[in-house]
Length: 451
Ligand code: BGC
Image 1 (spheres, rainbow, N blue to C red):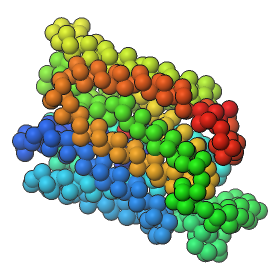
Image 2 (image 1 turned 60 degrees about the horizontal axis):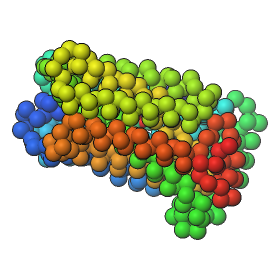
Image 3 (image 1 turned 90 degrees about the vertical axis):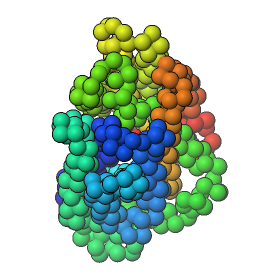
Image 4 (image 1 turned 135 degrees about the vertical axis):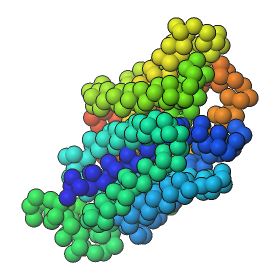
């Protein structure tokens, strides 16, 4: 049962990634078919993120009232309908509606799946799940890049969206067959059902009773002050919510998704002519994104969060500056072309080993127990809002300012983020969540709530 639940969350991560990855390959063909302006191009990309932000912010309510299982079921249906609508779209408006539905789906899933996972898996394997989830996101992006490449040979952006239906159907049946969350059942006063589910998930009846007691006492405490009320009453909670939101905005404004959504275009700007050539380069980008995530998994608990973040942001700032320089000179020789390509690839590695998995990890670590759903909902929403702005404004920036300036600005932004890490980000390596919460609540500076 526990494995089945992990598989389900993995599928949700995969869909998250595929949703992000599909558009970069589909966009050039969509532009050909519908002749869209650069503002409309930004909207086709970012309409998904609007849906996702709304989905993530609403997911807390859905998964609280209907339950985690039904929320996941709803999200899989939205995935299926969204993908099918995109497949049959005969104009930009319908396509955008499909993208918004896909966004709602991914917003609900990106909140609910990790939450469900943390509620059904035993404590001892809970820590590994966040990085695992991010790994699935990167695998999803890679899967979409590969499918984009394959379908580019028959020039069909519709099939690129069509394949999303397969994992979405799997998610639907997966969500049907997993148990309801024991924690949610208990919160609804359905203790007998919660006990039944726990006895399927845990080895012994002692374990079941112990956990049920824990859940009960947590629920009693939780009714004190939660969500909005806690935000109003508790200035320290406001600080952790603000930090979570800022962390996710920082993650998005690194410019990673500029590469995820517009990679073929960037490779063309760096002198790689032809759709197939740039789509191949995109697949390599996706592969590096997956592989470099393992660097984070290997070192996150050994070196700590902050050293890895510093390294990642130095790499990202330098590589954006290099790309800007190549575009300023113009990719006139093979050497310059490959330098441009290397800059993009090393940038992606820098993100995948640092900001990708670490920001999600930090966001799940810094929120106090009673405000965790609310705090994580807010930061997940911020992730998608930041994502929206990037998708929306990048094509316009590129059209208005040109490549050298656009990437130069991103280089500067990444450099400034190093100071943000220095001043505001705590080191949470090896510190218990309770200690982080005590430090936060005693009013320590955010950068010091860890060690
Ligand atoms: C980010 C996504 C991004 C992905 C790339 C995630 O952590 O939230 O916006 O596309 O990493 O691998």
